[in-house]
Image (cartoon, rainbow, N blue to C red; front, side, top):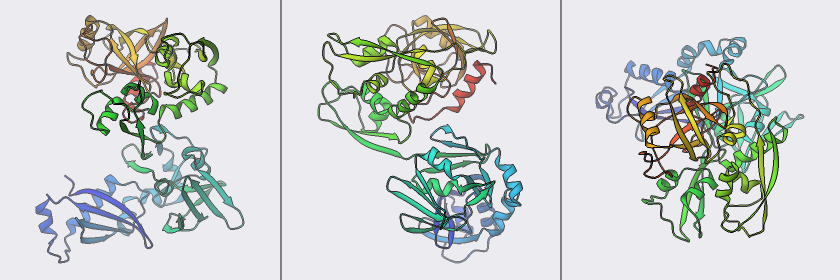
Length: 485
């Protein structure tokens, strides 16, 4: 068990320092360190520091000192020069070796795996990416002054500037230490962790999979409830879950009041409306052809029902018509409705399904309101389901109590979050998918199917509702259903 409960990485004028906080419940170890303020020479401390850093921290944390803390009390300092050399010797022995090791480094930003024109490399304990990729991945503006060899990165109210090869940078005018930028085959490479954290993103390193995970901070907005608002409609507008809204606002029921102020929290890069912008851009140049038909608003029409009728997400109908959730509809008003012709993709075998992208393909085939036959790949058992809701992935309910009973049998007699590869048959198409059977949240087929809630079916690159991130376990099962793994 770790003696440290958390760590912080602090940039100082003298370089990077790691603060390691001792678990106060580790009283036996605390006594060994003589926490009465006397200096300890116990070698156990260095061993614990070495083990913690090698397991928990990314090699690009090029720190000189680790400070061991008990609350706000400094217990000891450990010089990391020799530690870094021994722990990461294979990473920093030479530029050539570093570049060879970098080929298996994966970078994920808000659940999306990033690709680079020049592969990331690890040099002197720091992971580097091409400077131009910062602009593409983070939505930042990058500029270069050839005379002074100055790099500038700007996003919102954050300004980063440093000279090429310098170990000093300025972030909004404040001087900070930075691993020097480097040139690889004519490409300027910059330190990933420094740039990410300076832009307000969190960075984690998984040593087992050699994966850097970068996540945008949660942003919070306030929604004022108006007549006609529902938790479902609000969740779709902002790309969050109903449970997320209820938990953030401590709601015990689904009842809303006009004028009520609701806090909405979401990650910066994952709201469906922003994802929709990307989808529309992709479809203007993709192979999937989109045409438009006109719908004339009739008495009783609303955008949700129209989305179900035409198999198009409500937020997409709003987007293509330049409308919002609160836009009024008038009898006789004409709105555009996109219609997609999704080409049939080849499959590995008759047993496997089409490997279709959720955002641009699968969600239009298996649209809200559609009934489908789901077949479990392992047992061969089948049951009928109806997609009743869902934006980031398909939310579904068993069609009847018999279908619910078959589902439970497939999952070993108990509904579960465990994922299984499945084939979804709808409108003559067989789609590769992954499913969990645990009932949760809202339901629409009330009392008719002996199933309280809905369950999840994921397709290629679909995401979780709770955080907008890709579920890699689901994605692995989808590949099995497609015969690609």
